[in-house]
Image 1 (cartoon, rainbow, N blue to C red):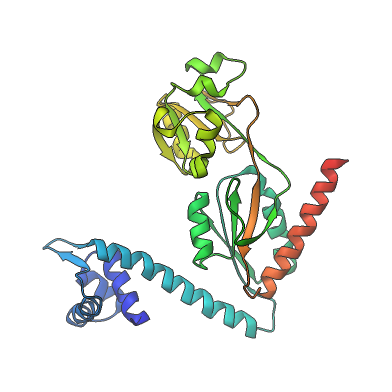
Image 2: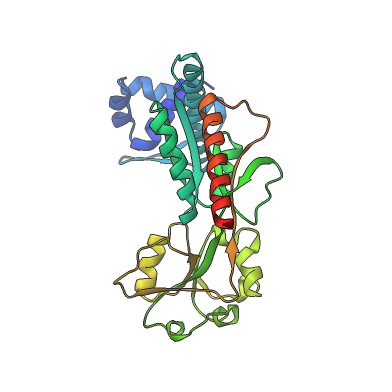
Length: 300
């Protein structure tokens, strides 16, 4: 399967129209149609459902689009890494995937230090829950993944970040639990809950709450807390989330920690047995020094 055909296919999938995709690719409509027919013949299944208005991907087409995007991204990343190796300057790209956490600040600090000294190193960030980030890491699409405990880290090299994130509840000030001094797990058993997808990895939250997932009143899931806060604003439910992710000062939304305290540690992980580029080695060295320094400061 040629990369050229995959790029053509992605253009058609994006534009949902052969004519528009042909213009984008600077080719003719008949030629692009032939190329797509060749691709379908090679795969042995239809990739599109065609009608007068637009082209819709079949189930096979949806799978191919996902894999094609990964293949193209990995190919371009490989070309860039080879180019960086041959460069006389210390330059390159570092791809990091992470969920939302206030404790990513130590990574931001490290990036600032690296770019001050090596301005040709570019950092690319990808957001997602722990499972999404781990999948990208396994596929080689990112160099580092910031993963929340509990997660099986056995297959990765990893470094724990120095501070833990604290779990709590985001709620409208007029909701029932807003007047309680402490919110315990039993307070949430019958309440409408909004949970982040990574919070239920390995049944983390449900184990803490002492209930099976089917016994809880989960009304929505989310992967970005800002979107969940809009639901909280409308009193849809109580959002289980990490502390300090939103500025809720002067709003109708309040945050309260859970009792007893529930925390999650983060680890920055990377694949074992891979050749580390010079930019990645510099980043790791700087990050480890910052972690050591912050750990010492916390003990004094």
